[in-house]
Image (cartoon, rainbow, N blue to C red; front, side, top):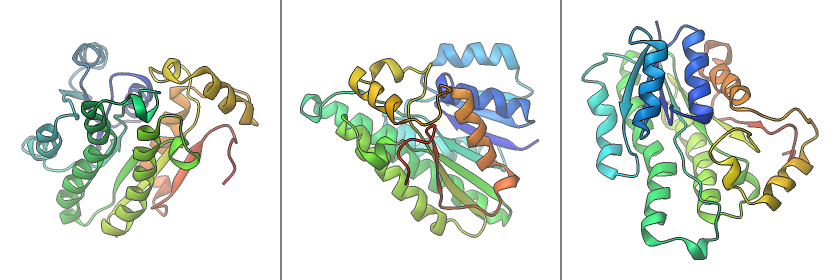
Length: 241
């Protein structure tokens, strides 16, 4: 049974990915700061297929120590889905210093440390491994939340660089969602931006977390073994690029 780390696993895209991964036969290591959400998932799925960890990646010490501590319990792990992220939906003028530090830690610094610590350990096995980062259309076309857009643009750059850094054994790709319904972020996006995202879509079936999860797991798995350094949009055809 292949082991797969999923951060931000308690809700939204992370939860949908966790549930579909278990259905596909993975043993999932779910990580989130939402302990109650993780406990609910643990009760549903059980310890035979799910291990959960409460971790707040706004804390630099947690970021740096998480993967080393995990490998005290596991000899090898197949994949890492860097999904945890935060979005405030407000102008850069309204960010406090603490909020700037928080979003940089959660949305970017965590990916740097989790990815390199995972890759360093798994490259020793000289076998196929996979990292999938969750970017955003905001990192490609901009965002009304400058810090969110900046971190997601950096995730795209990190994905491409790490595809080189971790080759030939660890593939690194990104999924770039647009307007995803039924998530905590959806109601935080200003209405005018939601309307603009919807207007740009050429496919009209609303994108749900499960639809994004399907693309994530496709990238994680062996079917995409020849793909690395790519950004795959999940956006109903909006923003052709």
